[in-house]
Length: 222
Image (cartoon, rainbow, N blue to C red; front, side):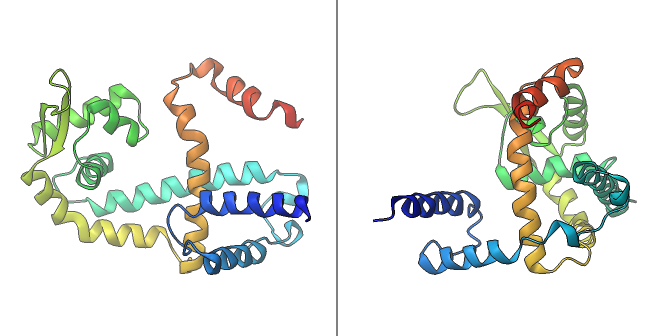
């Protein structure tokens, strides 16, 4: 028996199980075969990918960072348009409501972390939502010492009034990507999010953040 081959197959199965958490492929041999085929087809040659500044030595990491910033700004512009003329003051307000509607009640800290924001900023947003009667604060059923936030009927109504515009905005953000490309992008962004989210939760001091994360993850690559 070729044990090295068996080991490689097991590693592939582990990777398949890890990356198939959105159930894009069926959890059987056919799904596994389709995943392997897709893995082979989706790997373009670096020589065929062109980006601004490549000839002058600009790194792929620099391009990715810049494009992610650009996409964030584009998305924010469309979101701002989606809530124009409504009772919402910022896009964060309806994003907070969407998270509460989708995931149910949670503590203030949990809600703020889910939206990847600093606590002082998140508290201000939550206080505005409470002032508008869009969310309410009650004792936790699990621990009476803890307060939880949940969306109110008024909050649901405010959200529903803007949902058509919000859906159009999210559709526009995805631009001209094909359905296959959307799944590929979700897979890559999920991988990045799984890397960065635990780091964000550690609240590392800004003066030490870059050095700490780099030394922990990349220092051995040089």
